[in-house]
Length: 155
Image (tube, rainbow, N blue to C red; front, side, top):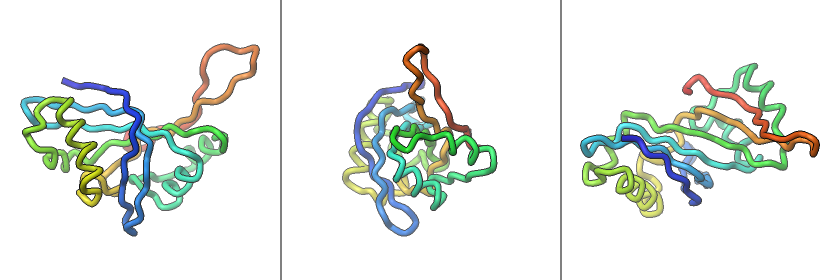
């Protein structure tokens, strides 16, 4: 069974150069069946500086092609960027079977991040960027919501 929860927490992710990237996590989707975690995705909100670092260093396996570059050029430097990532499914075994519900797995994942950031669960190279989007401000005479951005090859 899959669960999507809203969060507002900061998680730390070590880069290949051992620098720590702090991401403000606003959502998590997790799928636990029979005590086994099958899927884990995070939604983060990033400032423009952190996004530029992720992009320039290809963190979270983010690869920018021509299409993505064109969409990225529409980003407003003053607005947060939504960044969706998914962990390498081959590492989900690191979430113990004792975390046999979505709630228990989420608790384990967040607590472990604060206790042991160098656990492979948090290495940027073990995550794959899925979507990079940004809500745009509409003129006052328009209603609704406009997002710009792109989906990666991992989506």
